[in-house]
Length: 354
Image (cartoon, rainbow, N blue to C red; front, side, top):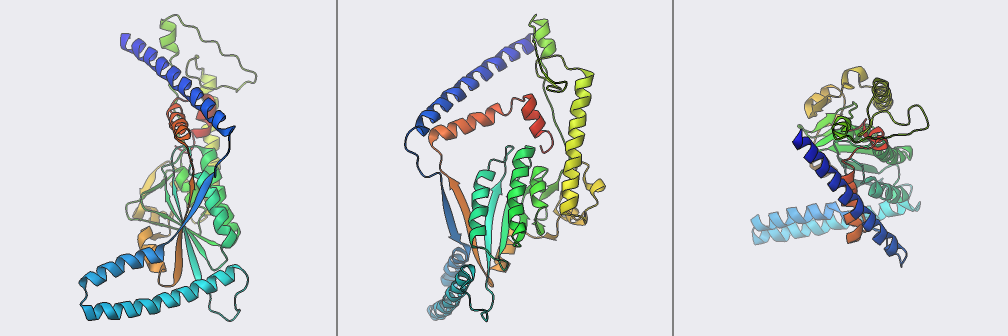
């Protein structure tokens, strides 16, 4: 019991310090924002064909004779000329200036989403999608390299909506999962026209989970009273410091079930081939098992997919990098730390996609 008391006091001190630092950092940011504003972010475009060609060229040259190197250089110049011509046609096509008799030239736009519990990468994703849609046409394709174990429903719901913008424009969307796309990550993935995954990638986890620590008995033993006043029968269901009731637990469980049902419907609408009652148990499957459950369409890594595309398509990686000051990075870090301390609103937002 003494350990629990000391732990509770320690936790209270940590929370107080964290909150104080967050408030201080917020004040500093507000003061900074009152001054001149810099560029909010920067869009970077990388030609992956060129990067791949450079790697293979360096390796080939190291192994070739002088005569072979000359022949390879001559062939490379010819290939480069053809590529530049193809890209010129693609550029004209995007500007509605293409020759109707010219052969279609496809482009693949590569986006990356490394998801955390708050789906904070959606801030960059929305900018990247906007940039791609400004130039892409029906002959093009978007490949999203997705890595996420899930998180809050509103964050991943917005991320899925950003991907929906791509498919609404009639542009093919492929999602590649090399490691994990579970829960909220799979919510995003199922938007795609095609899902590919590495053999041991983890997919699925179509379920709901939530947990809330409660210190009420500890506080009572120290003769500490907690008063909670609400307007509305279910403004609070479970709390950290108050005394939870069976009615509150039942309401909380009902909310979990409701979110789970919405999740199931969402997956069914986007991948009707899936037997939703079989896969929506909260379980996750490795690549081959996910293929058997029709959670994915093909076993393949993103590297294999892109290398296969390069001979016939111009491949561009699009990255929108949000500029952050040191203070902003500090605030973000503290926000992540405080997100580990559940509150009612945070729990309700998070419980379905962790």
